[in-house]
Length: 169
Image (tube, rainbow, N blue to C red; front, side, top):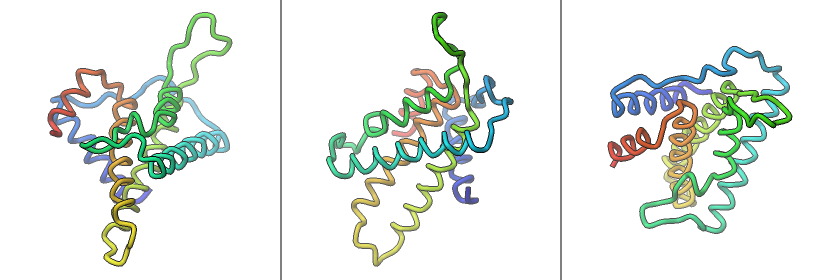
């Protein structure tokens, strides 16, 4: 991850902490579990595939467009469900397998999405780029996705999310 992407994520976290008036919690379940590099890479690759598929679908169909822009939860339903699954720390008693939270992979996902946002910012600053509208739309959707993944990663409840969205407006 680039320094700009790391700074972007840190800045978003600091904004959230200021708006909430408290530090953000970090996932504890599974945080110390070692994940083989091959597994971690595979899980990140699945998230990347979801990102590319869902962003392309939205850019083709403009299905989730609203007057105020697109909503990340509608644009990226598969990606957000996948992230929730990676953070799952409890399962139903009759589940055939135990919960296996992977917050490290969600951190990798955040790094990927933040890096993508930096690339989009760079592409938008190129005056010769002829696809500015598409890049702007993708940047807005990707920024919203970062916020949604951060909400999940830090375990924010609906009231917290409402406060953050009101502070942003």
